[in-house]
Length: 444
Ligand code: GDP
Image (cartoon, rainbow, N blue to C red):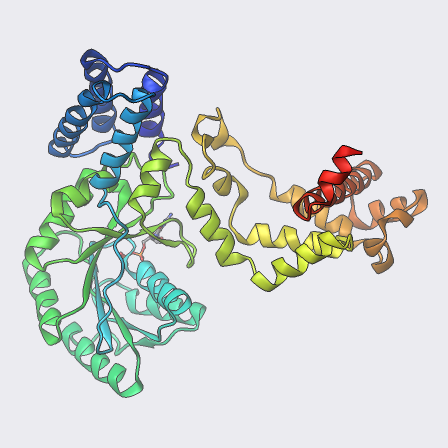
């Protein structure tokens, strides 16, 4: 997991100060020594570390003067605030042009994930912002980059403007912009040529594309795994072409976090999105505050809720609630629920967003067994419609048949039936309480 070492160290430091009723200057000094060490180890830019420690120290030394009940907690809040500020403070939204099309230029070094991110971004724009995006294949240098974008377009059912590799990128961009106007696309995403390193001719080419029509956003795509290098790349691109924001990719890997913590401070450009995997829906808006909470082990409940909201159908949820209330929840509903949860992503990733998750030893090695879920589904699929609606009728011979049909054992069938009954009981209590009936019951 990204930030693991940093999170562990910072949380250890915080633990020491958490319960303190009084925080002395010496306490702050000691804590800051550890914080500095943790940040340096996470490959955070040295200047940034110094500045951060200075800010937190100044604010933290004052807290024991304040008549606070828990100065320790206050210090933690200061660290969290400053971490948030360091990563940009507020979430930075995409700037759309009031006169479409909005033009977004994607720039970056080869292998950073620029082409993949272009596709992911177009997907986000369509799904979340209801836009009609056009992808433009202007990376004519990297072998197969044009085909790669076309394949992504096919997978996402999104249009890709391409003219092969014999036409200059500037000409491709020019024609794409015309095409977008004619066909009323409202966002144009230009996948420009990647480069192995900063190179004068190619930079000039980016400037020429820029000059066609001032882009509303120039997103630099950088690989979070490259740490300090990502920061240097960002600085160079910013000086040469000017960027408006950064997309940090591969944050799903075990990066130490230095890039995420330094880029904003060094370049003054916000991180707008983060890549969280190779899949095409693995691009998330970057929320500095949530990331700070996650690093400090306070969980990222907001992202979790958003994930759930994006995947759960409102109408279905209402229907389900009704079923709980009227006790008509069946195994068919149960299987549907399982599938909803699965859509949120791998369960082990979801677990990591819970508060305190980083403190659970070995959570990183926990692989929630998708196979187990598969077995549960298989059992349910082996039931007849009558059994799914009225599990009470499942007697010994039916259990035998179900176990055989699903390739499981009678014990597993029993376990599931028991869990299902318990869940129903729990739901009954919960809905009872919500409607006030529970109170009466408790008095009895
Ligand atoms: P480009 O040369 O910058 O256009 O890079 P590509 O888009 O071809 O990406 C390079 C590799 O990085 C591909 O294998 C991508 O699947 C992978 N990649 C891109 N973004 C992410 C991410 O957020 N997480 C992970 N794990 N892999 C990514």
